[in-house]
Amino acid sequence: MEPSGFIGAAMAVQGIKDATVVLHGQTGCRKGLLGSQKVMVRTTARDKGFYGGSNAIPYSNIRPEDYYKNTLNKLESVMEHTSKEDYALRVVMCSPGISMIGDDCRRAVHSKDGSMLLDTDRLSDHCSKGFDECMHDIVEYLDPEQGIRVEKGVNIIGMSIMHKDWYSFCHEFSHLLKDAGFKINCVLGAGCTVEDIRKSVNSSYNIIIDPAFAEDTVRLYEDKYGIPPISIGRCPIGFDAMEEMFREIANVTGVLPEHGMSMLKKSKKRAYDGIKVSGKDLTGKTFKIIAEDTTAVPLAEFLTSSFGMVESDEHPDYLFAPGNIAVLEEHSGRCARGVDVGFPSSLGSDFLKKPLMGMEGVMYILDSLFN
Image 1 (cartoon, rainbow, N blue to C red):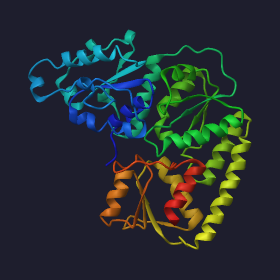
Image 2 (cartoon, helix red, strand yellow):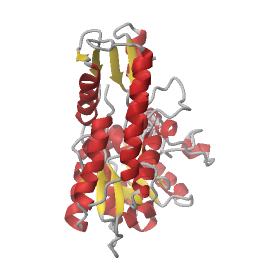
Image 3 (cartoon, one colour):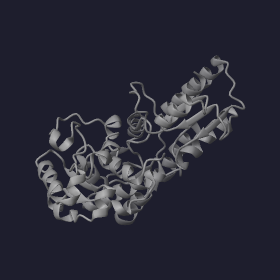
Image 4 (cartoon, rainbow, N blue to C red):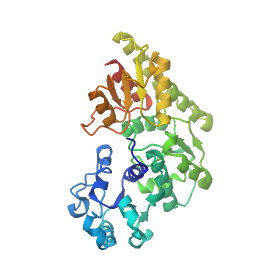
């Protein structure tokens, strides 16, 4: 089941290091949001009375009997507590149950103390769209004042902590951009700070990683701050898509990431040698992908054009899907092998680099196919 826009919005906030969601709702609604701890852990010890034993996402902990009383006072209590903590931004989100009873949460939220109320009733059903809508609203709320444009300053947008091993891809991609002389001002919603977001409006370009996660936000940067987007219309998955990304950067900025192109060539050689040594032929092997089109299309292109594989919905040899789905489908015998290409499985922790995008992403795909 695809995560909802509500979860996407919460992950957008939790991807900002010094921001937090403040959930006005029940324990059950919060459990689904604590997955953020698996992809960007927060270790600062917090008061169990407001955090329920976790170090992330304070909440009002509404119980059934509270619906017959005043639920708003519990939100006011958690807002007062978190106002004394080290957050630069607190984003209040109301659970669907709370939205139904119509609490006027605006009474507990004051912009002057670094808090904003996200209108969860209007969030899209789709996870990626919810993420985008929330990031758009955060930038709009912060309303940064634009200063002097940073020459060759770039923002990386459309990247979330829900993307497969987001940290490893960001590290690889940022390194290659810096080698080309670019300055990374902000990786929006994936390891940035609130101050990074404020500085992001001074960038010269926005590089779009996953367009599905950035449509509204990119438009805001372009219309309000005059920052042009650089996009290939899909995620950089596979060698061809990664090369297209480098060349599109050159088309817009006039600067080709030469080191990136060199590393791409070496990665292709390494991949070719590994495939030859394996002696394994994937021609005619079947696959199915459960993912956003911006992920599924380039991944399918890579599998079909590079290996002669064939898409199939019926008991595929390889199922590319978010972690829990990949594990469940493989164990139930509905596919020969499940490959995690989204939010990781809750069954374990990854210590090795396993991104889906970029050159290390290709190696992860190859390792999943040939080993």
